[in-house]
Length: 401
Ligand SMILES: [Zn+2]
Ligand SMILES: [Zn+2]
Image (cartoon, rainbow, N blue to C red):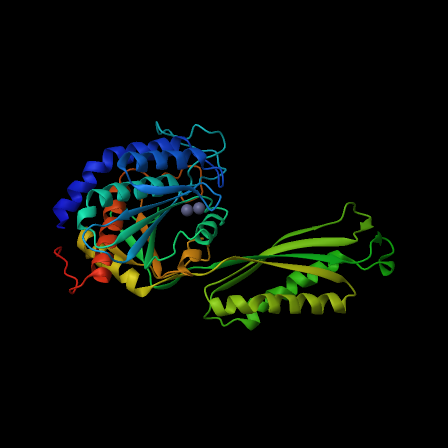
């Protein structure tokens, strides 16, 4: 398909996709509560005659399949997340949130509308598709539960590769950011209960003070990243909560702490619960306290597959121009539950420029309308080329130059 045809096909769906985005933006739904959003997606897919399942994995997930008719072949998956955040929107846009205290501050209205637009274009060109495209409309990304539920429900079974985009305010509209290898960190959490012996604050020698023990634990844990992790390997160990005590003249009986552990190195991630508990056990033993340590495995590291990223680069260069394909120098220590899909199939996430002057997760953020045409075209063309290259009886041949 030449660029002209692709652009025309995207232009044809753009008015409806834009209306959908405005509708979603005005009616944001929190993670796990995406009923209306899922219904809207399902209605659009239904009108087009695209086969799909709703309530996938007991969530509001919608999973659709477009079956190419050119050849049997591989399956390429595209993912868009649907949930909003508990933030009060500050905007004058006519489509601003109508739900008090809830808004699309991460731009998932754009991601959902974009994926729906890609579905419309791919469906229109299904006679020329050499394989299948699976569309994952995912709920509950912000609480990192949706992807795992969809994976467990088999939504990516048989998928050869998977792609997602995230709107990115630091990039201008018309630019994308790509990166090979680790792109976003794993995110695990832990909870620690320290049990001492409470008593009168005037007689500390009759107590075992869990506040002092906890303070030493927090300090000792700072040595883990400083002295047990290579300086060349990004890692974060943060103790984020510390609760104890009820009065200034009472030494508490127990303290409760929690924190997060993040890294870009899957092997280091596996090693860390043992290291953290060794430090806690040592400090507690030295200071006569007892403890309970609960470690919660969260999202894995997002590791972008080089081949899928290269395909995005190639499509980006052809559609946007080489100067608009930006190599991202750094990963981030933020997390993304897209990582669960990547444990099942190779894939990549790329950043799509929104040029919004406001940061993600702030009251002024807006995905905007202008990125949609680029996002849809990039997803459609990446899927098409992947299928051509992975389903072809003869060597893949791209007409686009
Ligand atoms: Zn977010
Ligand atoms: Zn997001």
